[in-house]
Image (cartoon, rainbow, N blue to C red):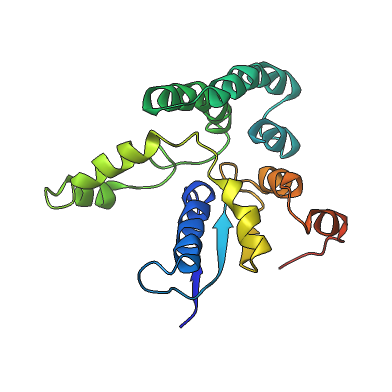
Length: 199
């Protein structure tokens, strides 16, 4: 049996770490061998928001002032407290855009979806522990877990990076930039390859 690992939203953070752990376990003959063949991630906020006309130039310049403190906070993460601090600082970028974008989209509820049934589900005592899992995952949210991807590529594990054309939180521009900047033996050929439309 062949396994392909896929995911969206948090996938850009956790799927590479999960795929890397499975692959390292396979190489070290730990436990049951998992025939991992590839993984997919469905994941520049301000640049994308400006390019898509979601914000104006003055908003773009104002929100970009959050970027240096965000980068500084990320580079200083060494534990749970500093990672949460970096998350709070960097989240100002997205939240500032959403304050402007929220008036342009017709939304139902806080996150533009009706989560009433989901809230009922998570309110059940049997599944309430999931909030604890989510909170625990937040404490490493700002760690760069994508550093394991080049080693997976070098070992022949396939990867698909995809994003919706109009998805702000997992936008294509940010994906394009980090994929192009990722250092691996195929980087030069990948960056110089021609682009084609996928419908």
